[in-house]
Length: 172
Image (cartoon, rainbow, N blue to C red; front, side, top):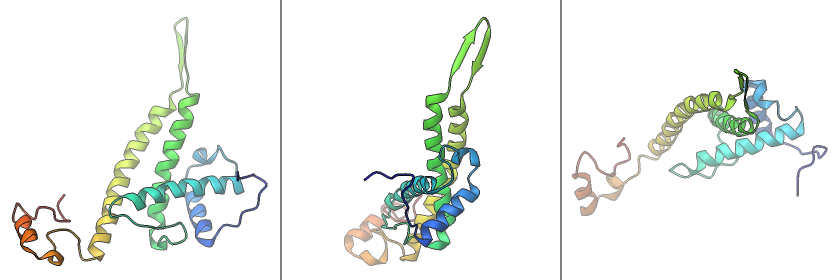
């Protein structure tokens, strides 16, 4: 069933908080394709879902939903969603950018390159934050891997002496 702009959808408190945080920190130009209202909120929830899927699928895998995601990590989820907003804006502008030259006069609208460099900078920060977030999950569980005390067998002792804790969770 397709969403209609006149359709009334009740957002959960978690969804409302995330949409509010996202609209508060995202530049208006990136929210412009969809006017304020329920249609924009549904679009933003879709982008939040993409970001949450990305977080869930990075190892170790998790099963968060928008409503179950920890509130103390909302800022991280909003930042991850902004990565997706940048990617979608780049896709949108790639269809509208033009180059025109006539009699030595040229016009070049190339917003995709500028958004691409911003995306690359955001992605570096996001990857570092995602790695830190996932490492904290591993630490909260006492570390996991073949060289941890949980697997004290002859095989794990042999693997652990192969070189500075081979197959350990804390190896860069």
